Image (tube, rainbow, N blue to C red; front, side, top):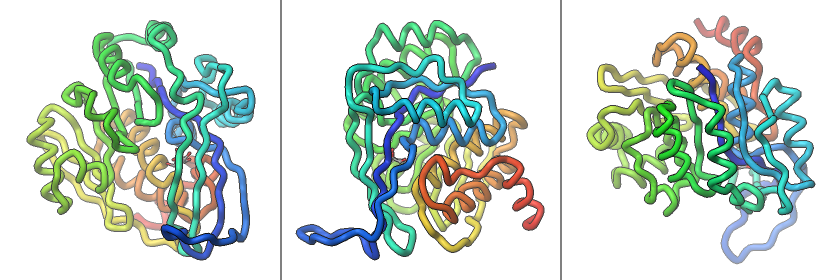
Length: 297
Ligand code: RIB
């Protein structure tokens, strides 16, 4: 069984400020740092750091060569990453002194996927392989349909949630990763238990991972529901905490099929990512996570 992540690769321009800018306000930042990012790239690196073999597909421009390199140096298979004549996607990220963030995306090369490219990559995968997706690339509906047609298991993090998601047949998703904003948009509800309940009704065959930031996370499938509290840490930068959660949960779940264990590992790994600056560079490796786990268990 192989894992393919078809997702974004971004250059993150991260500005440190004492507070997130309000509408109409102009303010000076304390620092600008440039990091590798993109929900797709972060999740591939989290999977690889968690010890899983992962193939990444997606597009970069000439300015994005370092994104391919960081994937490679973390053990992600990169031969399907394609360079196109377009600027690499980027994100303008504000991080406040209390570690919260706000993100503006520029899709660039991430939204240049074509049917031909998708078909050629998917041809390399087969029944039972896993296709991990987020919503920072174009043709998400096509990716879901074609992946499912090949018998791949579809894992979707519908983030950021927008109209493209509404074009997708979400009944084809085998496992969802949603935060409370996305779950609220899908279900129209605001309480976590209600969101989970409605998602269970809407997608009875799917597994659902609902993350609630410092309020913990749920895993639910047709037979069982687990809750995991969040681990309290001093937040430096919450960027990629959700991506770290996704990567660690999925890697652990694939290895031993336990939603409970996977929630625990993912909660520990994402709390560690919050203690560090940046997106992909903040993701801990599995040895670090194991050491932290021993202090908890
Ligand atoms: O989830 C965090 C990521 O969202 C950042 O790395 C940024 O690039 C955006 O894709």
